[in-house]
Structures are given as structure tokens and as C-alpha cells.
Amino acid sequence: MITTSEPLNELIVEIAGIDRLAIDTEADSLHCYFEKLCLIQLSIPGKDVLIDPLAGFSIEPFCEELARHELIIHGADYDLRLLARAGNLKATRIFDTMIAARLTGRTEFSLAALLAANFGVTLAKQSQKANWARRPLPPQMLEYAVKDTQYLLPLAEKLEGELRAMGRMEWFAQSCEKAIASAASTRVRDAANAWRISGSSDLHGRAAAVLQALWHWRDREARTADRPPFHILHNEQLIACAQAFDTGNAEIPRHLTGTRRDRFVAAAEQGLKVPEAEWPQPVRKPRSRPTGEQQRLFNHYKTERDKAAARLSLDPSLIAPKAAIEAIAANPAEACEKMMPWQRALLGITD
Image 1: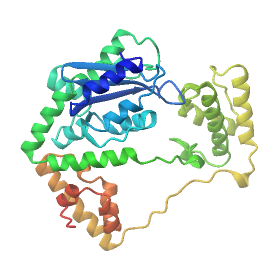
Image 2: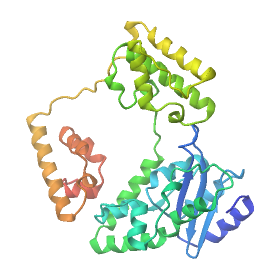
Image 3: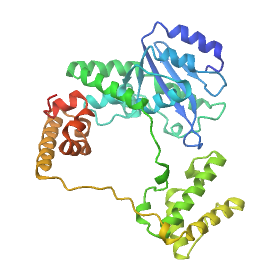
Image 4: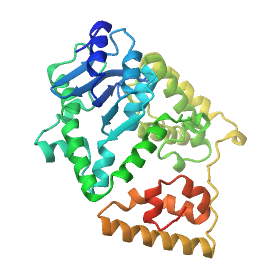
């Protein structure tokens, strides 16, 4: 476990001559409102290293070095975003073992499934949702963390061999390039509609206004306590409370006490007082009926996709999900720009 800058600098020198590095990260999003990078796992031939980014030293020099290597990661998007935010990582090459596994035709492609199938290794599930910000980390969590990268190098070699034998390495290269670009993009939160949680569309009128007020109450409470919103109140409870207040049958959740309970009630009452003219309105995305030509194109490309998927033993959505085919039928030029060349080729779309 590296907890100071000196051994980290020594590690940077050590990995300089090694092209492939197995990387993983752990964060505390299930335990905090303000998510932070809590652990970095690194494996090279014959050595596994844990780096503690909470120990008070900069990881930017390490991330600068990482950018010079091919990073073997399982499901790269989340890890790349975490490392970019915490250490300004600008990845240039990755080997995403999840993408590789899917392109070989595997239907079970979680890391746990791949390690069990290929190496007989079992990952302890109880550590998946553990609080990685706790210190010191207990032995079982450290063991889990090490296993996350310990087998990625041989796993990558195995998957690469299969992809080369199948003639799909170019598909894989394009997919990894797209994954890097996607992780580097900025996700913009729709603040105005963030309160529209799953199930909120079932609430109308004043009940929706109460839900909106309660959602903002929960968000403030979570921010103040630095806890995930669901630690304050689950989405299902928020919806049930909004409905109950709207019908005059409110029951305060028992775990809400003291001033937090008072603020909860005040928020609900504020929602009840919202004038009818200001009640939230349902959001309906305009959806026009496809023309005859668009329906013909959709059917054509769906048929081509399904034939290719069956022939290649691939998940059809890996070639093109339904939404992508609909987009192609509606606006071929724009939709095709978002697809990778190998996907377009399997659909019979020429540049």
C-alpha cells in the first residue's frame, strides 16, 4: 500500500519500461454525497500495488505516467472518469476486458464471471458495496482490491488471442477508442428535471409539486450530511410520502427525527401550497410516427443486424441497439456518424 509520494515516485520509475498496466479504482459513491477516489489498484507482471489517494499526496504525476501506457481495465468508463477528475488522467490506450469479452460472444462478462470461468477465482461480493473511504482497510477488502487487477493481464492475453483468431481485433480497437472518447466527454446534469425520479411520472398535479419539494429537501440534507440521497430517504419512500401528503394521509417515516423531521414536514407543506398554475407538468418527448420509408429502413437494418448477430454469436445490441436503428431510419447520415465502422459494415452501410 503506497501512502506517500516517495514510493509512488519509485513506482513511476519502475513501470516506465512496462507497456501494459492493469488498473482499477474504488470510490465511495454508495456512502457519500460527494464521491471521491478512494483506492487505485495496479498490477504488473509479478507485482500488485495499492495506492491510497486519500493519504494527502498528489496522484497527478502517476496519472501522467499512466497516459503513456496501455491500460487494461474492466468496464473502463467509470475508472477513467474518476482518474481524470482526481489526477487529470488523459488516457491514450486502453484494453477494456469487458468489451473484449462481449466481442468474443460471451454472455457472462462481469469481472467476477470471467475470473471464475477462466481462473477459478471467486470475488467476495460483500466488498463490492463496502465503504472504501474507511481506514485502515480490513484484510478482506484489501484482498478483494488486489484480485480486481491481479488477473487482468492474463485475462487480456487470453481475450486478445481469441479476438485475433476471430478476426475481430479491429472491431475491438475501434470500440476502445470510442470508450476513451466517451469517458473524456462531460456529462451535463439536467438540474431542472433531476427530481423526476423513477416512478415520478405516476404523480400528477399537487402530488408532483410535493414530490419536487421533498426531492429538493432530500438533496439538501444529503449534501449537508455528505451522504448519498438514498441514505436519507429512498425514492420509493419519497413517492409514497408525496402521495400521502397530497391525500391528507401523511405518515412521517419513523427514522426521521428532530430538526430533520421538521424540515421534511416544512418541505412537504411548501409543496402543498404551490399554486395550481405552477404545478409540474408531465414531460412528453415528441415522438412522430415513422414514415413508410423510415419503417422500411428500420425493418431492413434490424433484419441485417439480427442476421449478423446470429452468424457471429453476438448480442444484437452490441452491433446496434434498437434506438440506434430507429435513428438510422430517421436520419441515416447523422446516426451513422455516431456508429463505429465495424458496426456500419455489419449492417451493410457503406461510407
